[in-house]
Amino acid sequence: MPAKELQLDQAACAECGLCVAVCGYDALVLHATELEVIQSECVLCDACVIACPTEALTIE
Amino acid sequence: MPVSDRDYDVVIVGAGPAGGLAAITTARAGLRTLLVEKHAVIGEPLCCAEGISLCGLNDNIPVDRRWIDADIERCVLYSPGGRQLRLHHPDAGYVLSRRRFEQGLVDIAAAHGCDVVTNTEATGLVADDGGRFRGVRLQENGRAYIAGCAVIIAADGIESMVARWAGLDTLLPTDRLDSAAQFLFSGVPDLDPTRMEFYFDTEIAPGGYAWVFPKGEDLANVGIALAPAVAGSRKAMPMLREFMKRRFGAAAPTPLKRTVGGIPEFCGRKFMLKQNVLVTGDAARLLDSITGAGIANALWSGRLAGETAVEFLRDGRGDLSILKRYPERWMAARGRQMRYFLWARQIFLRMSNADLDAVIAATGALYNDQTVTAIDPIDVIKKALRARPSLLRLARHVVW
Ligand SMILES: Cc1cc2nc3c(=O)[nH]c(=O)nc-3n(C[C@H](O)[C@H](O)[C@H](O)COP(=O)(O)OP(=O)(O)OC[C@H]3O[C@@H](n4cnc5c(N)ncnc54)[C@H](O)[C@@H]3O)c2cc1C
Ligand code: SF4
Ligand code: SF4
Image (cartoon, each protein chain N blue to C red):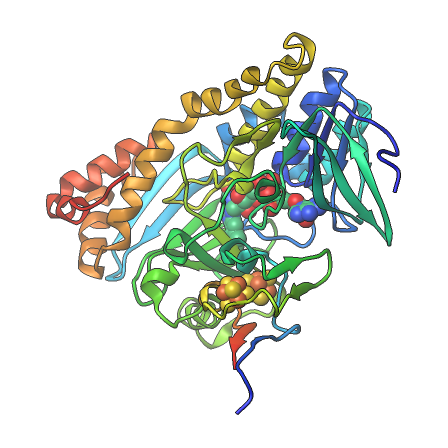
């Protein structure tokens, strides 16, 4: 089975920055028009998945 | 890379309310100021319900009527069992157009000589050997450069990276925030253009509340904020859809715009200053923990940060201790209420629907059908607690 990864649904993301504020690993960066996920930094802690208001983030 | 395209006294990152008022303050005092915004359009995308108290705006900046979408005179709080707390306050506040408001602030700053760059993202800070910051790294359409400066004001909102680059651990644990979603609607039925509605119910908005804020004509911001710590796997956007069914039934109006965002809990003064970086507004977590309001605190902290930067550069000859006046003054003005709200939030998060019914019924009996001209929120909370003293037991383990 492939390893799990943080998945971002770009269409659901409203670029609000809440996930960036809860990520303690600097694995998320919010640019002007897109959220960047830096998989190499992500420890799959789930904090951003819990906080995101739109279900744009999942760990699968 | 050039060390600096141009040097400034102050570089401000983020053109929200905090950055806009900081820029007005420093530019008006004659400091060479640069205001940097990563988005192309000031005030967009919106992450706000746009409500502000009269004094929250007027105490900080003379009001331009073009910023106002609605004048608020009434608030109604609904309990789960249908009890009401009706406040009639002729000067309660406004619903802003944040788009016009923020552009208005930036225009004033620019008229005082502030340089404004949009479409430009701050990507890092430059420090000298002594740990003092000497500039901000900027990225504009593939062009990278450094803007040199003596003071940096971080006004970059909830996602603030500037505060982190300065060395502050502004990480928000998920039990210290609200997660919010909102639609802008046209054609809202039963809308009083002067009245805000708030709905409290642990089923509708666990750990938070739902709102309907009028925006002139038949427009309204309709949203909910919930606390992920008590909401479990329930999310703000799907819960907002549920609330719309309850509020509007089958006749739900069509949404014109979607807004989502986060509301951090107040964290004390600890994220307001690091070396010569002054952190303001949401970046410093300066929000009222009960209402989730942050615009007034953003304005207030932006103005005080700007004023302190002026003192530092004019009289201080670079003495870093002058900058400590910024958090001190802000806490002197706002600290008591902010700490009280933080404490009250801990009780609120633990309240049941029966508690909400009892508190809204009791405070309703005191305020309904009366016109009040000044509301002290601390006084309202005290009265609510007196009405249901058993709530105080919920606060027994609160440490702050
Ligand atoms: C759904 C919702 C409803 C709300 N309703 C209300 C309300 O009714 N009343 C109220 O008082 N408060 C409300 N708030 C809170 C309020 O929106 C904030 O407290 C307020 O916007 C904070 O202002 P600010 O200037 O600190 O930050 P922001 O308004 O977030 O501005 C930060 C700015 O910095 C820019 N930026 C960020 N990073 C960079 C970078 N690296 N480079 C360049 N630019 C950058 C951003 O693009 C943005 O323009 C609400 C919040 C939410 C999420
Ligand atoms: S919290 Fe969700 S909606 Fe907000 S920026 Fe992150 S992924 Fe997008
Ligand atoms: S799962 Fe945790 S580490 Fe990964 S991006 Fe989300 S908050 Fe950061």
